[in-house]
Image (cartoon, rainbow, N blue to C red; front, side, top):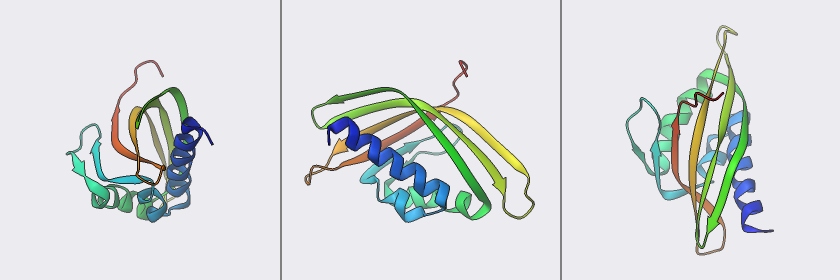
Length: 129
């Protein structure tokens, strides 16, 4: 598996974890020192920040998500992935539909065992979509 394929695999694991409501599957794709910088949210650090952010979302919503990779560059043991994220949410209690779209910048770092883990999750609005 190439580095780019391995990073895409980690992204797919994250997305499938989100859609399945499997928080620990999401957490497993993250580096211990992950930084989450999402729009209109405080900065979060580490795997516990992932649990704190996504746990309530998984409890409240059924989620169907999509990710379009627009750029993936591997430089040694670091990789930058830029793309467009979209989700469709259904409120579990009321069946109300919600959702949104964002541009994401994800940074991955190669681990000692050769695997790739996310170390930065940053989003913002993308006016082109």
